[in-house]
Image 1 (cartoon, rainbow, N blue to C red):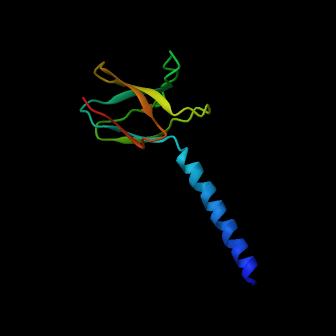
Image 2: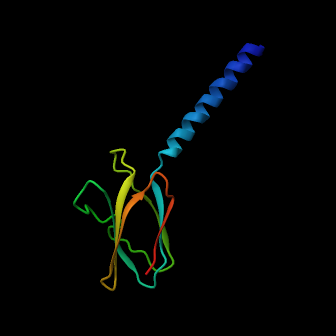
Image 3: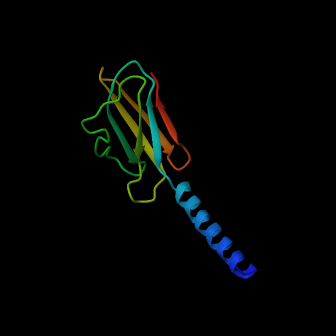
Length: 111
């Protein structure tokens, strides 16, 4: 293989891997941990510009104490900043405002 073709192939491979890195930087997956002693029965993530909690992301699932779940917070708008709300089995609600899911890979509920 000629030196030119080898350099071109290397550049193409490097370029493709760079694009993959950009996609990863926009990742909005957050590992949500329940570090309480109470079961998390509902989890909401809504853009800060929204006055509605929208749907319960856990649906029929729950998050027992000590468990975690990976949640894709991407709603298709490109937004990075969300408010989180957790509802617990004992009736306690915990709200965390302005969580930047483009920078945070983990989020913990603690009481």
